[in-house]
Image (cartoon, rainbow, N blue to C red; front, side, top):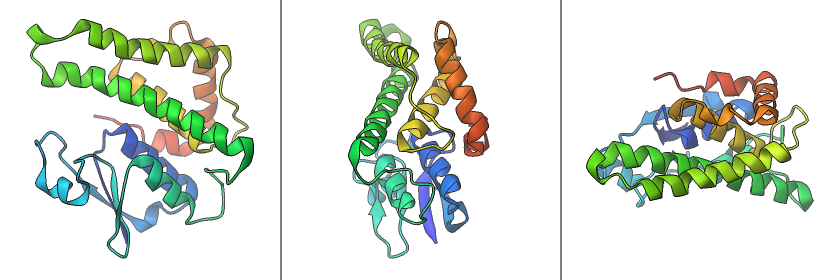
Length: 203
């Protein structure tokens, strides 16, 4: 049995859970919740010295991280659909889109952490604005040229969908204003990929 250490609300954990469902291997995974609010959580640190989620423990005891690595591992467990193209421009497009999605998530999480872990009197607005500018740049680029999507997800489109879902969940969906093409893109993705709705955070 594979074991996934994560949080129900983690967008990176959501990527892994979506991948498992899409690949049809979710029944082989045992979920193990982790509390990332505990400083240097010793249980989590024993699995990942960075004290970050998600972590997957393989059947032989090996532990792998981060979400990109875990998703590529899960992609290797079943032949289709292929989420990580093996070569050529399709591979580089998928990986680049994956990096774009992860970058948006990184910036969005840093904005959340600024308010969660620092008292209001020391919030640093220029830092928040810097993170928002990264998100805005990605959104504007994708609005001008939405990611190619033919109804079958790959790692890149999956990552972008999760990033947009996180902006809906933690940032009140403000990204939707002024990005109608991207809203339509996410609607099409959600309609074609049931795993997106299945893994939607509810808390």
